Image 1: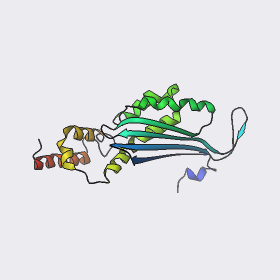
Image 2 (image 1 turned 180 degrees about the horizontal axis):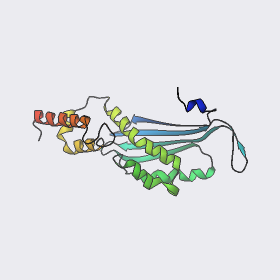
Image 3 (image 1 turned 90 degrees about the horizontal axis):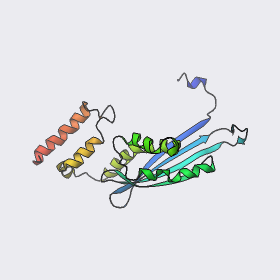
Image 4 (image 1 turned 120 degrees about the horizontal axis):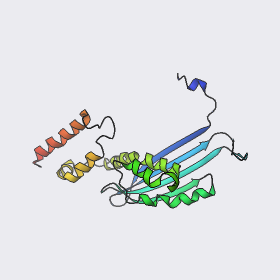
Length: 197
């Protein structure tokens, strides 16, 4: 039993973010993120106007990600539900992320490119959530087929890029942790076995 939950009334607001990844043409995937804010009860604006419960934000962002370098090749925005007509003006604000890699520093780069008056705080929240989820989706998409580990480890640039997507991204993949050591040992042992320098 939770002490906080013993103190609550009816739910006032709910935000859901869902992110899905789909294989696409060539060496690309489409990562689709959806943010929905729902007000659970009728509410009043500062002006006194009463509004009905329901969706206040429903925004969809689709990223076309090139798997060679994990670069955003294209972006689409669908504003299904927005609170003000003026919000339509942010639709094109995501064009600045074309060419950005989904790699270390992604969240900070999104804040620089989209933060404050440059964009929409809700689209920015969605984009930040999409970065790590995109990597998971891309790895899941690739893992549907057996990996050619030999060709992967033979390409030092690919190994370096792969390791860069993991190192110090969380506690498990910390620089001095056992999981990273195990992965490095696996790669080193396989290189030796295959005669790859």
